[in-house]
Length: 113
Image (cartoon, rainbow, N blue to C red; front, top):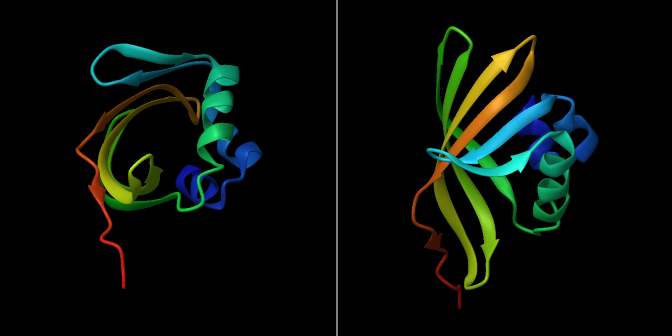
């Protein structure tokens, strides 16, 4: 449901899945956002992208860890394209307490004539 809220660009629905003291990392250990307020701020900006859409490719769950492979359509400075993302979530009490994201290389869409 977190991905559904992301795709709907519904910041309030999206944020309900994050713990107040959550940590958000670029894999493996670069802290990008510390706490719910910083994650919200990042996503308010991200949700302004006109082509934003995440598609779940695969999901694995082991204990309290969830690993998703997603393909995300974004609006890059060079144009619209897709990027593969590995998302690793640590869950406690139904909330994301830590998240790590490993991004592939963007693949720009070819312009149509």
